[in-house]
Amino acid sequence: MKHLVVASTSYQLLCLAAAADAGVFEGGETVLVLADGSQLPELTTPLGEVAGFDRLVERFDRVVDLGALLLPRRPVQFSPRQEELSTWEALLRSHWGLGEERITLWLDAIQVNPGTALARIFFDAVLNAHADGLMAYGPTRTVLPLALQQRVDTVLHLDLVPGLRPLMLAECSPRLLPLDPARLAAVVAERDPAETAAEVATVQRFVAGHPAPRVALLLGQYLSRLGLLDLEEEAALHREMVAEAGRQGVTHCLFKPHPAAGPAQAEALAAHARELGLRLLVLDSPVQAELLFPVLRPALVVSAFSTGLATADAVFGLQVRAVGTELLLDRLTPYQNSNRVPLTLVDARYGQGLPAPDDAPADLPLAQQLQPLLVAVAYCMQSQNLAGRRAEAEAYLAAAVGTEQMRYFKRRRLLSLGLPGAPAGAGHPRVRALRRAVARRWPRLHQGARRVRRRLARV
Image 1 (cartoon, rainbow, N blue to C red):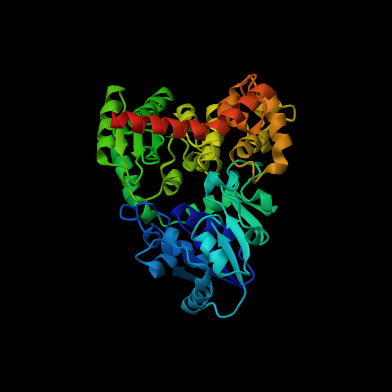
Image 2: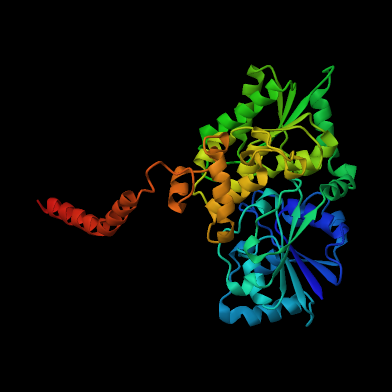
């Protein structure tokens, strides 16, 4: 048997190396498949060139590059036609030296390409998912074909929220395999100090001369590119990160911008920090934040809803703060947006201070329990995949009405699903009948309006 382990981000490389150390992929040859998922590959470091790549991949028997095979297309664009599947299987088995052995797939996303494409090509392979950070806790964002659902076996996830059970592929009843955060910490700890030596020296020069420096690491996410904020709002969010660092007694700020963000944002942020009596350094380095946490040991890590916050907390024991989450909860559309669960978890944990399930007291009120909150949000996002969890969602929402936890739900969404917390009176039979009547008549009204406009145009 051969394990094909697909990695699309540098964070996944770290987690998969930790999983290999834990013996997850035992029982056959392990082939690491690079499928770079960068949306802007021209501006980001290729997976094969990230710091410490050679050390990380020593855990695997071989490394192959799907992206190089598909050029000029990117892995996310890999979508072979049905009649091409057997040809692609023959090509990949030959090109990657797989022979005729059975295949087990470890995919970062079964529901989208290239994960779906590989699952279709290797039509009899067992399907396992390894989840990328906080996304693991969210529901599957599409309805998988039954032929894929029946092959799902395991969901491997980093236990960033101790005791919280992920809902990814929950409709397939998979085996959940949590990965101890200490495993990831061990992988990072064994890295060559030379890989981060330049960043450490830069920070040491930055804080030199201060008798007791307290350093905050600010993680940018480039949310304007996701359409969640405009450029000015994103700049305001970054300024709020600096202000929060100042409120926590920080003296120096390190701002690590998103690789795709422009330099203008960073320059304006440095000027704002000076106005607050703080010093700010833009850490424009290709080294990922997870590698900087243990060597810099910042007094505080600040971001919006980056997985880096949960990693800093659960893996490295650092103090973290989330800012701007209330605005982003309001802006995030549609409700099914897969960023909703990471945003909700970060706000609940680091904004409202809700405990992880393993740390929660036995008498914690239902509305303050993280697992029921997750189930309710996930059900509202993808009710078609979690139909069996409706009763749990109803129970949670009934307990949460009138509390701060209702910030995680949209009233229109609750109304459409007939759940507690919907606008009063909206569920009355007469109201529902009126909505149906309007829906039936709207096409005729719309057509009539178009005819009137055409007649007026001829006058």
